[in-house]
Image (cartoon, rainbow, N blue to C red; front, side):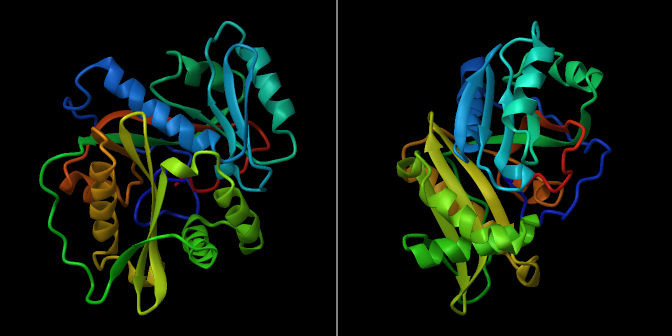
Length: 286
């Protein structure tokens, strides 16, 4: 998930923590970061039925057999973390899932979870930039068009393209299309497809909410990477945020995508840690 996502996500995640650089620049005060994390929670919770359990446990369940689409977003308090883990296990028992630990989680959440047997899969930098200002010029491939997804057939093309990049099983694509089409926040979502020679070769999804343009699912088909498609998608996502009156743009970057986003003026302001509990399925997070 990209959650955001890099232009070229690996099929698996190494268990070692991904090294990230944290820049001093970023949101000017805590309220800015709170809006960013609210946007990210909306993205994740929108994948399925969202619930709040004991201790402020925010978790979601799509029912798909893919951990990107089931999981825990945060726990409100560590005072009852063992009960929170038990609640998550019960609610997500028959699907693979992840636990996301971001800047909106209580300090010490990762340590508390690892103390209960969780394994950290990786760390993704949370990157932010103001929505205004010049965009990094990128020379797109000749003939490339960035189109807003507006039909069921094009939505299926979008899902097929990012699913292949994320390692989603082809048999899940039809169910994933239905989940996308039924998201409760679709009025705040703009899905973009990079189209070349009539074929979708790249994707991104923008959630314009909480004053933030959250940029997710930036994926480029393996046959078209390194040709400017990711840059063209990023430029288009920033334009969507500007047109919708958002104040900033934010994303989680894969190692492959981070250099591109830095060229666009994004800086790392925090991070998300991704954990799995025993029996989790360690696949690619973005």
